[in-house]
Length: 307
Image 1 (cartoon, rainbow, N blue to C red):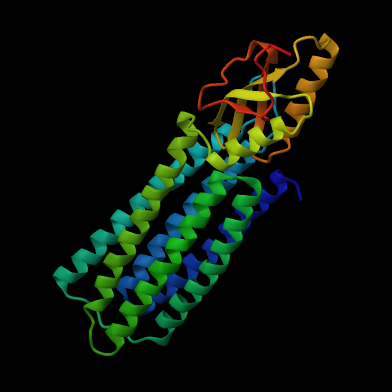
Image 2 (image 1 turned 180 degrees about the vertical axis):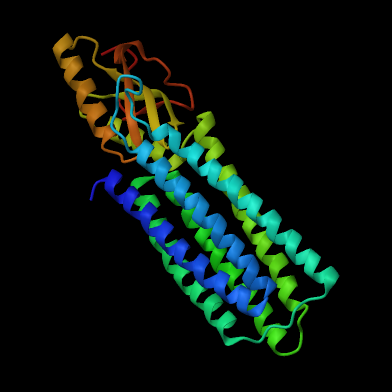
């Protein structure tokens, strides 16, 4: 399955599941008056809203390149994730307000089996959705789907916290219900902050992991006619990575040979899933440039120009 189809499908799946949970939790809340279940219902409403945003955002980001966006629309995806984070933070604040207010006015005792069932079911469904979204996000390197995965992970924890509150209320400790609502709100807000931190790096062009940088260098040096690599600069442009680097080759190679070497290296590095564009500068190895710097990489061949 191609990336565009996979991202659109998972967006619709998450939207559908969150819609079902809103109805289920809302019905139980009106039947029981549980603050914990009500907080979870608010959380699911927020999830539903951001799911709509994710579906719309993924539709835009998976559009093919056009004259105004020659590199495609993937750079919009971190903005979609930040919008998700803002919605999550707003939901967390609303849940916290309701829980604190409930403690002040007196908690409602809850012992309904329906409240227990809907929260336990939510924890199971959200865990399965978290694992699936995480796998898809890593396969296709999608920050929006990764944000969705993190939100579902937090939903597992908050559903368990809400379940503890409902169980506590059912055995005579009704204060645990709004206390669980507070725990739910903190979990929601933590997820929002985590998503913001993760996606700001995409927007400011932060460097990717050292493992990716090493793979880029290894692929360049694997070419038999490349004797050294330096000035390797990979950086994020949205969720994708652009790479610039210098290759050292024999200075007496023909222009055609140099072109073929460059093309081979570019194609090899572009096979890395995260990489979008690769920009190569060729240097004659006989000049011996950059050999004493920590940022240089060579295949171990001496290039001091005395051969």
